[in-house]
Figure 1 (cartoon, one colour):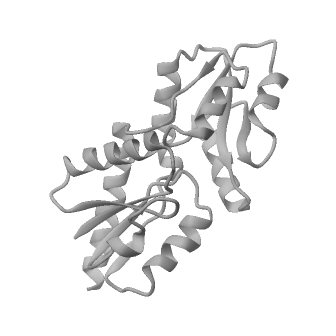
Figure 2: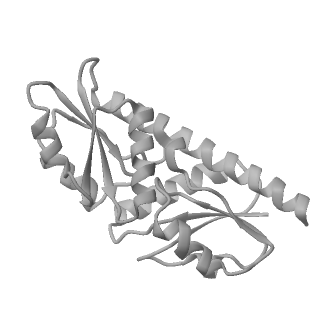
Amino acid sequence: MKLVLAFHGTRDPRGAVVCEEIASLVRSSVDVPVEVAYADVRQPDVRSVVDGPAVVVPAFLAAGYHVRVDIPQQIGNRPDVVVTSPLGVDAVPAMRDRLREAGFRRGDAVVLAAAGSSDPRALADVRRAAALLGADAIGYVATATPRVPDVVAGLRGRRVAVASWLLAPGTFHGSLAECGADVVSEPIGAHPLVVDVLLRKYYEARAVLLQSA
């Protein structure tokens, strides 16, 4: 049964490279077709990729509009397709690894940097991720406040480490270079723990779909 990895989509080619890197690692770990689709901006969209029985795994860090509305609408009412929960807070261990790799030190003030959303449920997911990470504060890059540079400035007097709650490089992550922090982690990217989560979600959903067939 096909596995469809549904990403947000970006105009930045580096983001598309990361999506393909994640998909490549997933393909090397499972003996089923694995395809990449995008909820927005890039092609192919989810609708055009789901052409038979499939499990769609949203590679999103929060359950905002695209996960709750856009992807299900693109799929439609299809009994042979199931959409799993998004990657979400299961990616926190991978984010923690990226923060350590960037040079986090014990005693640093940690700011979780997220893209932001107008959906309060997505912002709740961000707060859950920050709590699991043990972050001191949350800052947003785009669609919410407070903004990351303001949060970092408010923590001065301590060494500040920013944990990037972003999946791939692009404009959002690039803006963190100017936020004033001592340490900024790389995006989560094609981390082995991310691959493990995506595969687990696929197998769990496939088992449910096969039982109901």
